[in-house]
Length: 133
Image 1: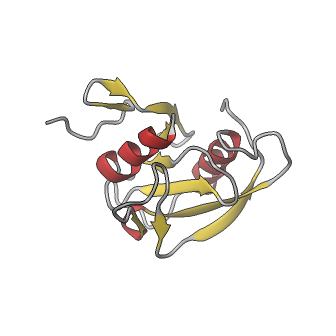
Image 2: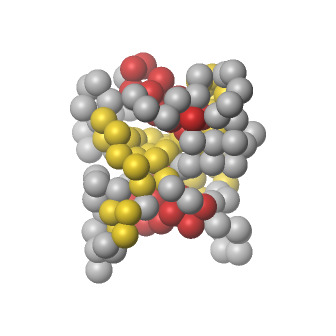
């Protein structure tokens, strides 16, 4: 069985684009709805941070949190949110609302379509879409 990795690969298949924030945190960006499920449900750890554009289909974004930080730095949050916006249906607009939460507050009830999840607790940040840091 494969273990969660920081290189965006799950069981020999690339499921996420990989970025690094200025403060060295790994940011994983899902490639498809099915890959979003793998990234969120299989690869992300409970204390990792999770982001997604609020009113658009698009990539799930996971920010690794190996130090179990209480919150991301503002720079990391801004980058991760802008990537969530950039890899969403809102990428051609102006600012996009992005939900962010701890992975432990994200669930995938049985029967939900690929890429769909439920959030128990989350916050919202506005981000300008971008695809390249």
